[in-house]
Length: 138
Image (tube, rainbow, N blue to C red; front, side, top):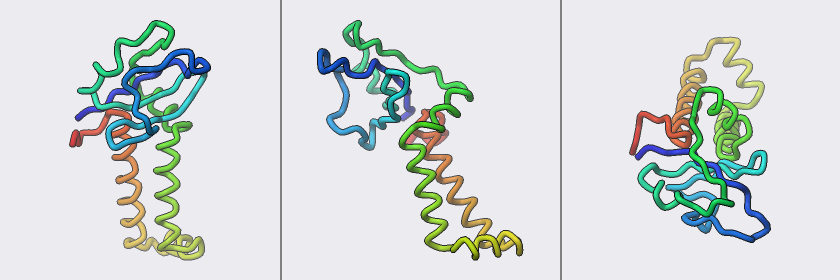
């Protein structure tokens, strides 16, 4: 199931409601990326696009074309991307102190390198899935 990034005008003081939005910001199917320049960005499964579009004109909803520049920008400020990075760092720190990490880097410790590369690859796959760019459409 591929994801599509949509953006819509941030709530106008409760004067309109966006149809199709989940009651919680993030579910296993819908991911709220965050708010930027007056718009809220969501990643939704492509087969659920009809639940979001059409909307009332004042909602100003649109599908975001994900180019490399757009995906890089979303990854800089999007909440789920920052959370993935924090989890990766926390997992590394649970296994390696800063001193141990430096030592592993100095000695070219293959166990450490493999551990970190796997974590980074998992995080990248999660980010690509949110952006709708994942090869794994499960």
